[in-house]
Amino acid sequence: MMLAVVEIVVLLVVLGLLLSRLGVLSAAPRDPRPVPVRAAWAPAHEEVDGETRVLLRRSYTGGDGLPVVLEDRVLTAFPADDPAWEARFTEAMASARFRCGYLNAEEGR
Image (cartoon, rainbow, N blue to C red; front, side, top):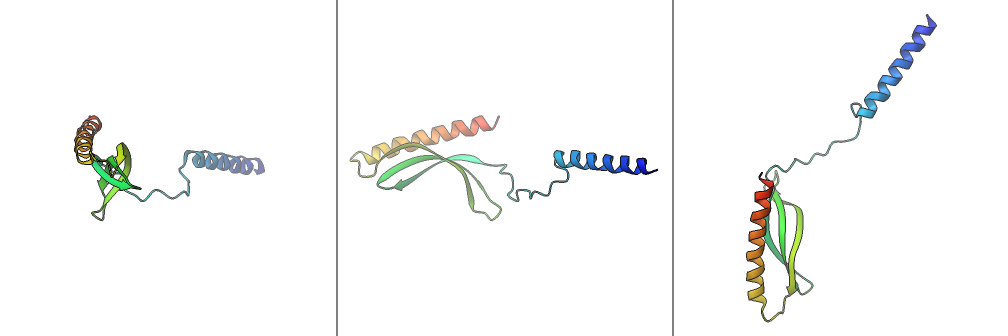
């Protein structure tokens, strides 16, 4: 009789370890953030330390209606006091719009 009790205890311990390893009994908190289903790339720009940066920004609208930025990629950067700033900015933003369209099309497959 005692041998049967020991076997059951060992079986329960092994089963508990197996379930724990599989994550079924895990007490780790789950990520409360929603999975961004409608994330998209869009052109953006910013000026930092006297430098204009044109960005490719991947974001989605959060539950509160505000944008949530997932990633920023610098497409190009140039001095903010460049005499040809307007031409460079216009060209860079056009390039960013084209690139964002391409990235959105690639993710939409």
